[in-house]
Length: 139
Image: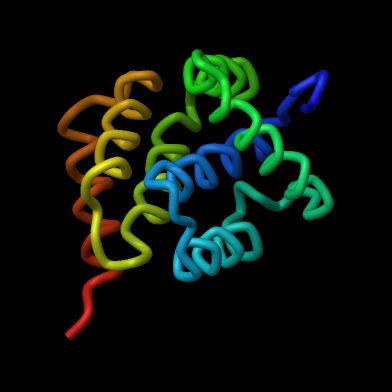
């Protein structure tokens, strides 16, 4: 168990991505690939240190085992992340959820919780969700 679960802004974005992937108790390869691609290509991760990834993962998994762990995770994210990046955080979460071609069940509930916790406007959330879904469509 991590004693000081401090997260940087970049760490908190990764933590939400991991949380969405793990929310249905099955972390799929497509989701891990999408997280890795975002870390390597999105400007918001320019300062992210990849050696933080195991620690951030451990924090998320430790919190998921606690009764109020999800609330604690959201508290850490809100403390670390500037409000101007809340929609970015939601977009990253949607990308991970859509990576395997479907958003349902626990992942859909997790997105709803993130939307609520980060106070994402419903219309903006719908646009972000639709964009993620469109990027992950198959023939």
